[in-house]
Amino acid sequence: MFIAIARPAVEPHGPDAVAVPGSPAIADLSPRALHARLLENAALRRQRGQERLRSNRMADADYWLNAAPVAIRKASALREEKSFAPLP
Image (cartoon, rainbow, N blue to C red; front, side, top):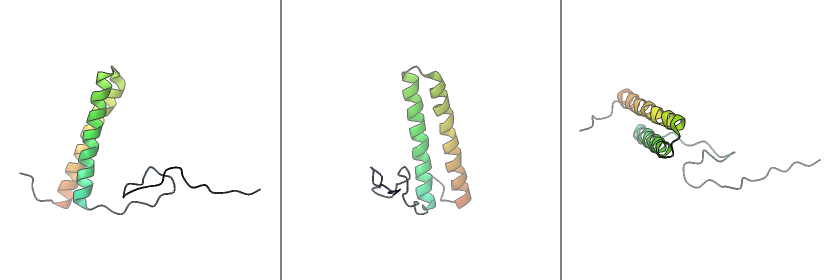
Protein backbone atom coordinates (compact mmCIF):
# COMPACT_ATOMS: atom_id res chain seq x y z
CA MET A 1 0.00 0.00 0.00
CA PHE A 2 1.36 3.36 -1.02
CA ILE A 3 0.65 6.53 0.90
CA ALA A 4 1.07 9.79 -0.93
CA ILE A 5 1.32 13.02 0.98
CA ALA A 6 -0.81 15.49 -0.90
CA ARG A 7 -0.04 19.18 -0.96
CA PRO A 8 -2.69 21.37 0.67
CA ALA A 9 -5.23 22.93 -1.64
CA VAL A 10 -4.38 26.38 -0.28
CA GLU A 11 -0.79 27.50 -0.35
CA PRO A 12 0.33 30.18 2.11
CA HIS A 13 1.01 33.65 0.74
CA GLY A 14 2.76 36.20 2.91
CA PRO A 15 3.85 35.96 6.52
CA ASP A 16 0.56 34.73 8.02
CA ALA A 17 0.43 31.07 7.08
CA VAL A 18 -0.99 29.77 10.35
CA ALA A 19 -4.21 28.36 8.93
CA VAL A 20 -2.50 26.13 6.39
CA PRO A 21 -1.54 22.68 7.71
CA GLY A 22 2.12 21.88 7.32
CA SER A 23 3.13 25.50 6.92
CA PRO A 24 6.26 26.85 8.58
CA ALA A 25 5.97 28.72 11.84
CA ILE A 26 5.74 32.48 11.68
CA ALA A 27 8.93 34.28 12.59
CA ASP A 28 8.97 36.10 15.92
CA LEU A 29 7.18 39.41 15.65
CA SER A 30 8.61 42.61 17.03
CA PRO A 31 6.86 43.86 20.18
CA ARG A 32 5.23 46.69 18.22
CA ALA A 33 3.96 44.31 15.54
CA LEU A 34 2.60 41.95 18.19
CA HIS A 35 0.94 44.90 19.96
CA ALA A 36 -0.68 45.99 16.68
CA ARG A 37 -1.88 42.45 15.99
CA LEU A 38 -3.44 42.19 19.46
CA LEU A 39 -5.28 45.48 18.97
CA GLU A 40 -6.48 44.35 15.55
CA ASN A 41 -7.67 41.11 17.12
CA ALA A 42 -9.65 43.07 19.71
CA ALA A 43 -11.25 45.20 17.00
CA LEU A 44 -12.22 42.11 14.99
CA ARG A 45 -13.72 40.47 18.08
CA ARG A 46 -15.78 43.58 18.75
CA GLN A 47 -16.97 43.67 15.12
CA ARG A 48 -18.03 40.03 15.34
CA GLY A 49 -19.93 40.81 18.52
CA GLN A 50 -21.75 43.68 16.83
CA GLU A 51 -22.61 41.46 13.85
CA ARG A 52 -24.03 38.81 16.19
CA LEU A 53 -26.09 41.46 17.99
CA ARG A 54 -27.59 42.60 14.69
CA SER A 55 -28.41 38.94 13.91
CA ASN A 56 -30.12 38.52 17.32
CA ARG A 57 -27.62 35.85 18.32
CA MET A 58 -27.22 37.04 21.90
CA ALA A 59 -25.12 34.15 23.23
CA ASP A 60 -22.55 34.56 20.44
CA ALA A 61 -22.62 38.34 20.83
CA ASP A 62 -21.91 38.07 24.56
CA TYR A 63 -18.96 35.78 23.89
CA TRP A 64 -17.34 38.04 21.29
CA LEU A 65 -18.01 41.28 23.15
CA ASN A 66 -16.52 39.81 26.34
CA ALA A 67 -13.52 38.42 24.43
CA ALA A 68 -12.50 41.82 23.04
CA PRO A 69 -11.28 43.29 26.37
CA VAL A 70 -9.07 40.23 26.89
CA ALA A 71 -7.04 41.14 23.80
CA ILE A 72 -6.87 44.75 24.98
CA ARG A 73 -5.52 43.64 28.36
CA LYS A 74 -2.91 41.45 26.64
CA ALA A 75 -1.81 44.37 24.48
CA SER A 76 -1.63 46.63 27.54
CA ALA A 77 0.42 44.06 29.46
CA LEU A 78 2.79 43.71 26.51
CA ARG A 79 3.17 47.48 26.34
CA GLU A 80 4.08 47.62 30.05
CA GLU A 81 6.41 44.61 29.80
CA LYS A 82 8.35 45.94 26.80
CA SER A 83 8.23 49.55 28.04
CA PHE A 84 7.20 51.26 24.82
CA ALA A 85 7.19 55.00 24.68
CA PRO A 86 3.93 56.25 26.19
CA LEU A 87 1.10 57.00 23.81
CA PRO A 88 0.01 60.64 23.54
